[in-house]
Structure formats: C-alpha cells, structure tokens
Amino acid sequence: MCGWAITVDLPATRKAADVIKHREALASALAVDEVQLIVERVRGAGGHAGRVAMWVADSDPYAKDSPLTPLLRVESWDAWRPVPFGRDPRDRRVDLPLVWTSLLIGALPRHGKTMAGRLAAAGLILDPHARLYVADFKGGKDWKACEQCAHRFFPGDDTDHVLMFKAWLESLVVDVQARYARMQQLDDEICPESKITPAISRTSSLDMPVTAVIIDEAHIPLEDKTIIEVNGKKTKLGDYIGDLLTWLVRKGPAAGIVVIAATQRPDSNTIPSRLRAVLGSRFALRVMDWRDSNIILGEQMNTRGYDASTLLASHKGVGILRPDGETSHGDVLATTLRTYYMSNQDWQTICQRGRALREAAGTLTGHAAGQDTTPELDHVAVVKAIGSGTNEDGDAAAWDVAEPLASVLAYLGDDVDSRTFVPTAELIEALGVEPTTFGRQMADLGCGSRRERIPAADGTMRQVRGYLTADIRAAARDGGPVTGHGETRHDGQNLSHPP
Image 1: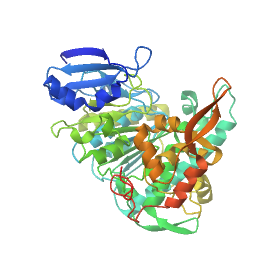
Image 2 (image 1 turned 90 degrees about the vertical axis):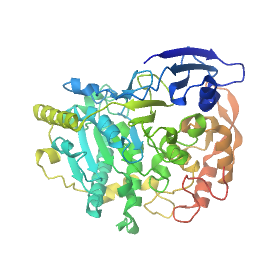
Image 3 (image 1 turned 30 degrees about the vertical axis):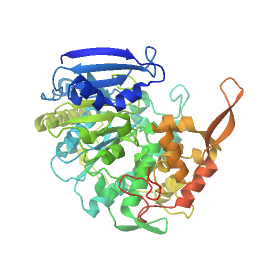
Image 4 (image 1 turned 135 degrees about the vertical axis):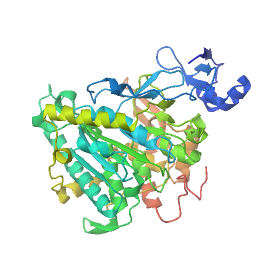
C-alpha cells in the first residue's frame, strides 16, 4: 500500500491520545478521507505520551479484496502461537493471541462476524492437541464442517440446545476446578506457576488440553427466559448461563480455556456487563451506533478515536481489534484491520485437515469420534465453584450493576473481598477508561474516592487516591440488581445520573 508516513513530537502538555481522538478533524485538514489516515501513539523505548506516528494512504486501503488466510498454506498450527487474523491499512499482518484470553466479536448481520470467528478458530482446529466445543446457535451451515473434529458440537437455537450448552459449561467449570487441583500436585519444574504450559497441554495423561468454547450468536442462550432451579432457587436460564460464562472467562484462561463468542446483538441487555468486563480481546466490525461499539470494545473507546459505527458498509470484513496482550504490532490499544478471507471450501479443507491431524495423533474424541458427549455433572461442585459470584442473598445470578462499577467488580473478582483499597490509577489502566468521566460515574453510583497511604516499591509510604473495597461492595449492594428495574439504559449508563 502506497502512502507517506511521519512521526511527530507534540508540544508539551499535548498528548498523542488527543490527536487520535480527533483523527477526523485531522483528516479534514489534510483533505483526505479519514479511512486513509492512520494515527498511532509511539510506545515502548522509542515512544512517549506525546509522540505520534501518522500514515496517510494514497487511496482507500480497504477497497481491495482480502487476501487468503496464511493457514491454508500450513499443515498444522500451534494453538500457543497467535493466529493470523488480518492485515492493517499498511498491509502489515496482524496476529491474534488466543491462549490465556478470550474473544468477543460483534457486528451487524452480514458484515463478517462468522468469518472472523472461523479465522480465530482455524488455528485451534489445526492443532491436534486442542479440544473444541462448538455451539452454533445460528443453526445453519457456517460451522457444520467443524463437527468432524469437534469434541462437542451442535447446530440449533431452541431451549433444548440452550440446556445442552448449560450442561457443557457446567462440565467445564468442574473440569477447570479439577485442572487447578492437578496443577497443585505437579512439580515446580513442570508447572512453575498456577498456569498450564505448552508441555502440560500436550501431555495426554494430565488431560489439560487447550480447550476452545466457540459460541456463534451468543445472545441466544444469554437471552433465554426459561425458568430453571439452581441450588434450590429459581432463576432464568440465560442469567445462569451468563454466570457460568463469566466464571469460565475469569477463571478458565490459566487452565487452558479459550472462549470465543460472536453476536449480532451487541447491547447491554444481551451481553451482561459482568461478562463483558472480563472478556479479554474484542473485535468490532460495523455496528449501528457508538453505544454498540463501546459495548464490544469497552467504555469510552469512541472518545479515544475507536468507533466501529463509523466503518463503511462497503468495507466487508473490516473491524477494530482491541487485543488482550501484544499482537504482531506490539503493545497497542486497538487497530483497524481487514480480516483474511476464507471461503467455505477453504474452511472445509481446514476442518478436514484438523480431523486428519487428530486421527494421526490419537486425539479425536467426543462428537467427532462418535462418542456419547452427554456430560456427567456434579451440580454441587458447580454451585460451589461459582458461588463466589453470588450476591448476599445466595442467588445464582451475580449483581448486574451499572457501568463502570460492574467492570470494577469484574476486574477485582475475589480481590474485592481480600483487598481493602485499590488505587484509582490501577483501575484507570486496567479498564482503559477516561479518568475524569470514570471518577464522576463512580461518584454518581455512590462510590467516592479518597486518599490513602500505601507502600511504594522502595518500601516508603506514598499517598494515592483510590477506593475502599468496602465502599465498592456497598455501592453494589445499594444499587442492587438493576436488570429489569429500568435503572440502566441501552448503553449501560445510569439514567438518573447521565454522563
């Protein structure tokens, strides 16, 4: 792709983030369409908060056809390697890490959501040691080729399929707990931390393979209103599935669980805030408005220059990737890219190759091997495992409070009980929010910040501003479960205290 590049050191007090946020105005000043202008902060040893790199393409970088995925040219893939996902406007390859994280994909219908999901899954399919759980709630042919190599698979969207999916998740909760127990018994040389390693994941006797849970049209199970009984209490099936997924996304990555969820309904009612807050990587193709974009990419991302509602309808497969961890471009907040192309025939070829690899390695199991995939469940163990996410009344559903408090609770997890104080700076960095807006919204939700003295790295005490976890818990209790009580609007903001 032809164009020109320049790196600029901004005047003192000016930040690269401000330039990125006003990219449209800068494009207007340069007399080019904003899709031709790429603005990035220069990070690392050669960068600082006021150094910005700009690249201007001579023509629309997304107007050409997407190249074929490089995975078509390989015989196998290592799930621990980032997956080739797409090309950025400068035609540089962007790889997506999957192990130790999760992925949320959101888009309007017919804008490349399923293609993006299959690209992410392809690297796992081509690793014979990876185990696949594929829930296709669309019920069409998009994922059918995958059933020949999947440990568990179904296409369908009725309540029976949702109940089957619930059983899958419950069995995975038990499996994760068992994996942690087995890791405790391993020698430090084999398992130096409480995380699986490539060697552990490929040792069949340990039974801890990288396991991908792939969910197409994830809004369908999360919206199911069937009433079920959990631990002696009645709850909606969709709410319970939200709790199970939240637990798996939060606790599963270190045990080798990868969740890939795609939806064409990216709204706060469909994807609970407690679940969104812990989903690591995000990919937003074209959506309806900035609220939907923020629900996928994270709060305030539109104010930081990343809004998937501004993508053109003609740009099929183009989206904004917010990765969890380093991509092939290094440590970046987000990048716009065009995903690789994978035809249905290419998809079938990759799935056939995945089956052949598993047959050769002796790792073909479950559905693909014609085995019974009905899990034997220990419901007591499931309730015990996710019990830390229940509210004080013992209900199975976790508090679904307004943002950004929900994201704070999800980030802290069990630490909300074990820690007494959390610095504001830590929350700002972890959640990627704008400081002033974050502080105002937390105050509006009844959680004010205060100054406390904490130990510094050199052993001295320093005074910082932050939040008492007791105040955070109290704010969550006082707000109560907001779902269904008219206290949260479509974009997750508190109606009585608009931003």
